[in-house]
Image (cartoon, rainbow, N blue to C red; front, side):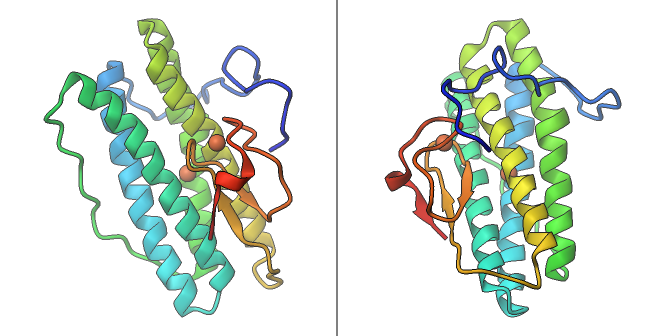
Length: 202
Ligand SMILES: [Fe+2]
Ligand SMILES: [Fe+2]
C-alpha cells in the first residue's frame, strides 16, 4: 500500500463501496461492533493455528506472517471492544473456537478469502451504518481495520505466489492499526502514519 500525502479515509479514497452480493448482516453500530469482534476473534485464532502449522511444515517466514496477522486482529479486537465497553462496561469478550489448520498454501488462500470478505463487504457495510448513525469513533475504527485487512489479503496472496522462494524479509506490524509491511524499507504506516520504529518485527 502506497504512502499518500493524506491519511486515507472514506472521503478521499475510492474503495469503500459494498459488494453488490453482500452477505453481511447489518445491525446497529453496537451490534456491528460485536459482530466484528466475533469475526476478528475467529480470524486471530485461525492465524495462530496457521502459524504453528507453517512452523511444523518448514515455512518459518510464513509462520511470522501468520503471527503478525493474528496479532493485528487482536489490535482490531481491542479497538472495537473498547468502543463496546464504553456503552456496556461488563461486555464479555468472546473466546475463539478451536481452529483447524491445513497445508500452508491452503491456509494462505483461506486467510486471503476471509480478509477480502472483511475489507470489501463486512467493514464497508459497517462503515456505512456508522456514518448513518453519526458515530465517528466507530467510523474511524472500522476504516482502519478495513484498510489493514486489504493489506493482509495482499500479503497472503504474495506469500502464496512465492511460497517456494522465501526471502529474508521479516513482517512488521503497526501497533496502532494492524497494518503489516513486508521488509524493513519503509518510513511510516500508510494507514495511520505511525513511525516505522514503533513497529514489531515477526
Ligand atoms: Fe486481517
Ligand atoms: Fe498503522
